[in-house]
Length: 184
Image 1 (cartoon, rainbow, N blue to C red):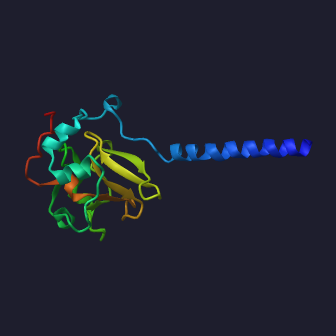
Image 2 (cartoon, rainbow, N blue to C red; image 1 turned 135 degrees about the horizontal axis):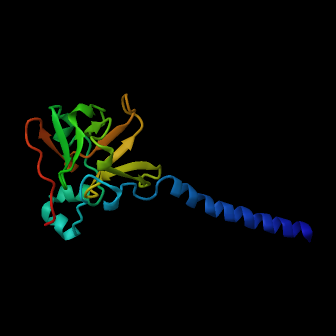
Image 3 (tube, helix red, strand yellow; image 1 turned 120 degrees about the horizontal axis):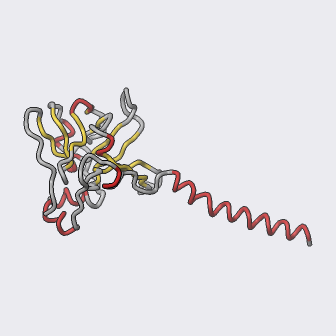
């Protein structure tokens, strides 16, 4: 009888541990958004619009990518082959995200960068859509989905910030950056 009680207790303990571990693992993998809100000392005011307002401002494709976390087809964006000097801004709110000085040809068919222009301009969260966890990144100001970051890029960071071209606008050097978008 005593042997049966120990087995039952052990089974209950192992079951509890087995049920608890995935929750700790998911929390450790960054299941939440890592970008900061207005109270974290960001150098800009967050832009919060309703979905109806976003639909008014964005093209249907921009809306699908930026607001619904879509992905454009590889090699479909002219920005993949854009190598002029300039700044890449978020297509949703015009926050500068990347510099042409950090762009490189990753061969993936999407504009790729080895670092953002300012870490405070990017937020990240863990993405499990393909089962294998990936790090999704978005504009810290408007929350617009940009792409995913991988650890297979060139030196000095070893990172590949793989961006949807539709989610960016290129501003050539010498042209004035657009003012940050305000509410509708």
